[in-house]
Length: 440
Image 1 (cartoon, helix red, strand yellow):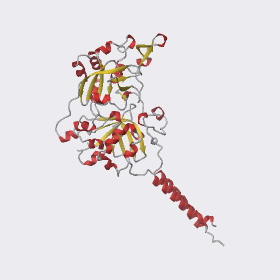
Image 2: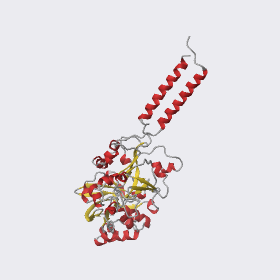
Image 3: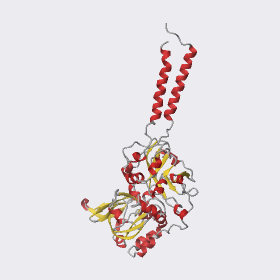
Image 4: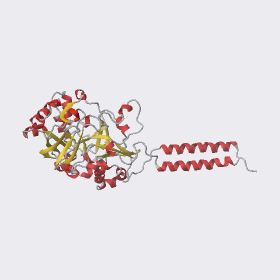
């Protein structure tokens, strides 16, 4: 006859089994802190290939090997300067330190960025660990960007310095690595000032450059009247800017139906921003550009994917296609890092504001007419899924279209392996505890 287990012992077994199941569930849900293969994660995104190579060829990669709970500010290929090393040296910084400044020692998901206070949040970077960052210059101030972007990252130094806009979330290993795309390299502000007493060079006056070039009177006048010249000079910091300036002949060649000059001031400002890339590209870089579709400064004031330029090499010159107008670069007006100004053969009219009409019988016509949208302000930019997030939190964030790879979406990564192993071990122990009850 089998021995019977007293009722009290049965209760003890049952209570132990329930406790073990609860512990297993908690372990499965608890974020695991495990080191992540950063380059392995980035390899799934071809548009980050250049940044990945920079990281892999620097000592920074080895410094990341044993770390977790990080946020990496990755720069897409099209937003990197032609020579990142020269770009860093021009700012008085070492390229490795610039890359360290793109590693935040805190895990920040898009939801965290949207909850930032108005004053922003100071986040320590890997550069702070070198001991070469005076005061808090090894940290960045991450501030909300309204509906124009996820956030803006800048130095906390009071002196002028570079900053970058967070374009979107790329991928994540939950609670261990968050990868965010930014629109340019960020140089630690004050880094060069800490090593010397010299201040950064004055910004290039784009209006003066155009006026001195003599053939750009209309462009210079519009730029001065619009008030956006100050924006261009502010954007020279960091990755620099590239300006496509239509000649006076280009403005004179506009068809009578274009209505450009009759647009309200804010819409003219959009057209001017549409002529500027938020990166410094000398002519050689434009001739061999890897990603032909480039965002403009107008993109930053609208939704991602709008107000872009398609830049290619055609018939021995650089061609620029807006979707409405096809123009070419005719000459270099100014080229001194971080500013490049090129003359273009036509006024670049965005397809979001203008449309090409057709002649009789469907024949193409050169007349470009303003659309109805041209009389109203541009649509307010929204963060990914912002329309729904105002009512309900988003359940999944996808990578920007140009940066999607074969990896998992932002919130779909599976639970860490140690948690899954713990869950199975606890289930096995529960079975062993309950086995004597089955023998009764």
